Image 1: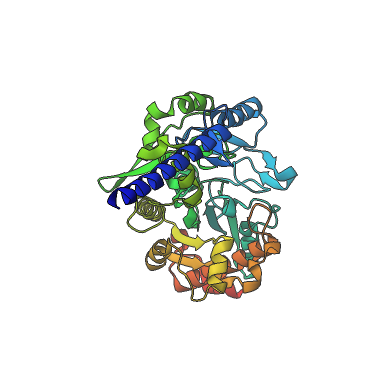
Image 2 (image 1 turned 45 degrees about the horizontal axis):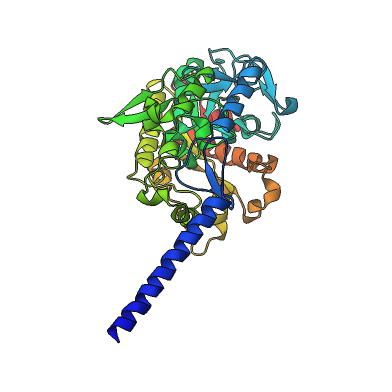
Length: 417
């Protein structure tokens, strides 16, 4: 009887092994390897992963061939920036001679009788997908003037920027315009951008540039990839990326392209893993004690210190994405985002404007957002209202009182006129 049971068990195991081998063969025969050496089956990319160099090359070559007319240009300190005196979005996004979004130019010395406000951030600050008069920076300027405050708003926002690039744009250009108030448009999701060096590895269709990246060394921020690798040098880096020194600082290479699983030689095991793993793995990015969390907080703190040293007030305006608005109004019970610690840190240490409090539940609807999930005109108007009221309160309390108006400017009197 024992022999019969052992024989049956052996048959079961043998059958299982044969089935596994057959399935392994089906995956191997049914899949295909693309020109970059990436094996795929049923739409799943299976380990070992490879860089999609053909797609990367197409993006780089396309930019290099048209760089003389592109509104987005290479910058050795910032990675990329806007071309002075150019337009985007079929002419609805104007870039002035200073390289910032505006239909007029600005002198570096601020007007003696006007408050100067400078904005820094990504596309939600720059105002992608809306016209020059609809972007919240322009609406803020109009609102403050209607409230009796003569002010001008300089929009230094640039699409696809990380927090690091917003800070560096302040250092490289913004501070030379001597603003009285600096507003950082905070996108906490950009904690992931702070860990990125090669934009195309984060978003395959992204601009073909590399970017500077901070690391924290003994409590101090240190820059890597500065000056940044120019577009013409990207393909050489991609084609031998495993030996590229900057690969060690690229989060989106480590998490998506490096084989770390011993079983990756099995196509079947790789298929099971690909089918079951989360669509996005953000370990090490958004929580307080991760590299991403610590780096983001360090960048904001350094930004604030540098602004204060230049006699300006530092204000943080949280610019939420659509999903955050959904959580804010629709989740039951309310769900805090993973980056809540960063919002709390800004609220506790700086002048902080929670713009989501000005949204109503109706603004969750897609009709208020553009096709690329940027703010539509109505949301820009809401953000301007939120930021404007926040600045009015800050000025009235004295927390944002501009030092250069110490003897000759009073918010209360200006507000009444």
